[in-house]
Length: 261
Image 1: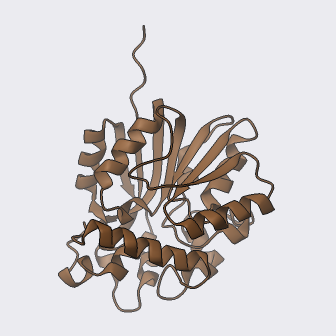
Image 2: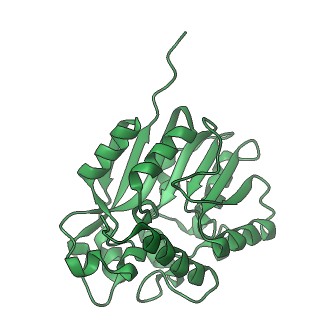
C-alpha cells in the first residue's frame, strides 16, 4: 500500500481524475479509454458498451455489474462512480423500481456524470459528491455496493470497508473489481503519486484485503484473480510491466443478515 501522505494522495487523485473528466488526461499511458476491445477484455459485452457510451472513460479493471447478480428493485451504490458507466449498467438491471447512487470525490466527474444522466433521461440514477471514506449515504439503505478499480486509490482502505458495511442493509453485498498485489512494489513506484493515481502503488494483497473485510464485519469473503487480466494491465505503462506485481480481482463479501426474532 502507498506510503504517501494521505492529503497528498487525495490531492493527486483529484487532480488526475478531474483532468480526465474534462478531457485533459488519460487513465493510462496509451489512452486506454478509447479502445472498446480493451473494455470487452475486462468483461463488458458489446451491448454494455452501447449504454451511455460517453460515460465509459476506460478507468476500470473489470466489470463489477457482471458479478453483482443485480435484481429488479434493488438499491445500488457505486464507490468512485466516475462518468457513471457502471451506474447506468446497474440501472438497466434494477429497473424503474430500483435506484442507483454514484459517489465520487472529484467535482468534475460528478458534473460529467450528472450531464450523462440528464442526456440519457436516467431517472433512477443520481450522483453525489463525497469521499468513499465518508459516504454521504444513510445507514442500512443499500442492497449492493459496486466499485471498479477505485478502492486502491484510497488513503484509508480500512475505513472504506467500514463505511461500506455501515450503509449496507443486513444481507447486503459487495461486488468489486479492483487490482491486488501479487509481489512487492519497488520503492520508486510505491512513493510515486503518478503511479498511485494509476492504480499501482496503493494496491493491497489478497491477504490484506481479506483481513480488512473481516475486520469490518463482512462474511462470505471471496477474492479471485481475473484470468487474462495481465494483458490489460501491461497496457497501463510503457515503462514498466505492471503485470509483474498486479492482477485484477473480483472481491466479494456479504453483511450478515439480521438475526431472526
